[in-house]
Image (cartoon, rainbow, N blue to C red; front, side, top):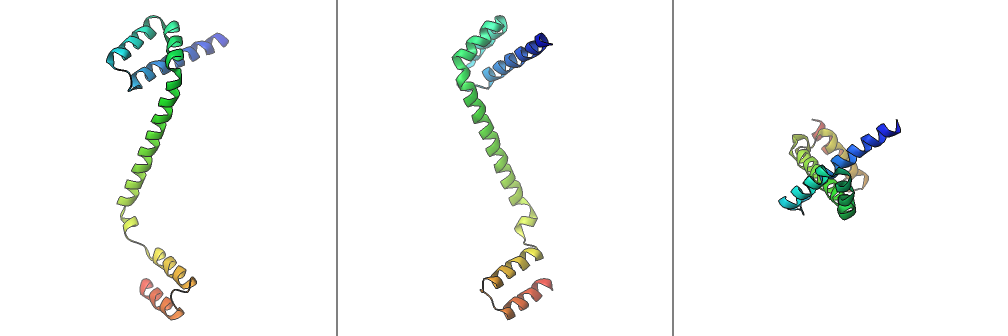
Length: 122
């Protein structure tokens, strides 16, 4: 069971290194080809040399990619929520909450509040 687990872990590491090679924008085409050949022809040596030479930047690339994905998701949510008609036109409930806030702060009198509330509910 231990050998099976180590074998699976080895393949996860191998594929992670190969994915990182192709994801790296700093490497040119020849650099990517060289690392890929090195990792495929001599897998154990290639993976260990890659981890020693470029292991630190693997984590930095992961963090940068996660941040870019999070920013893209946040931008998408902002755009999608701004495009909905519900966000553009306030509902009766929104108007009543706004009126109650104005009344509570003393910005409008009781008579003005009742008149505006009747207008909203009509």
